[in-house]
Length: 384
Image (tube, rainbow, N blue to C red):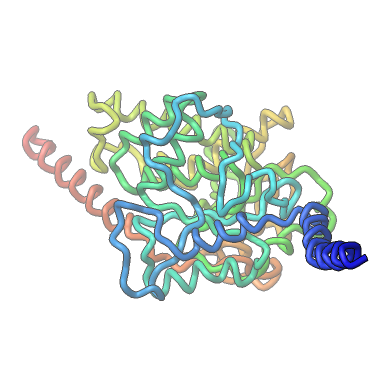
């Protein structure tokens, strides 16, 4: 009898201890709770992942990146790439497939780059505006080193020509322009220069009438000019300090191909490899080589292919609200470039403010001055 009571008592204690554990395990399985993902995100946010960057002592001056940077030696040679197809690369413990879309397939991500991950106070404020206005978005900040790894990982197998040009290119502004297209092309999302502020949440950029349409890319007018006539180049220009696109955007693919070809052609015409290019060798402005002008021309070319007709200033000049042409949503001048367009009061809200901190213009101006002096000297020598 005593033995039976002891067994009963032990059994009851066992039930009391085990039952909560069983119920908790069922709860975990049911909710797909993943403590390792949360721990990984916290770790990524609290530690500097870049071995080539000195860890700053002032943590308030550092914007932590969520891109986990492998070394080049760790990058497998057989990583599946696209033309380019986005890879399920881990960012803060999540796969790209887990990222929900903001607008018609455009992921909730904002891409930015910096030389290192230590930003100025102004840059931190501007950059933080994107997550403050869009709390459901992830900010992806890549440095010089992690950018090279990103490009190699996504493009090496399918497009080694892109990797070759990007890694050889030494002119900072050309490299920065190409990189922004490559980042958004690979995984989609919103590109923003570090000196741009988000003034209105991205989910409100698209008018209700277009929210169920296929939108491959979103661009805004930097310069809004009327059509100049048959046989002339497009007068208007889209901003490339902010734009958005789907992963593997067909429009961005055409932009990237044109930029890579342009860089190789300029190097060939100067009799140097891409690594030997200097600003003085550029026969045209930077905006025409890698910047907003070539982006504008190629997007309109892409739309022409889609629609089977020429697309030019006549399609969007003077628009007062966003206009969907083909699969590209074009914003009026006030949206992304209010300063250039004189703050028009009949074109809706300002969505983004550009603060013009970029330093490339000084280098561009110096190169143009050297080229002018060289031409003057050559003219004098020839007696012209």
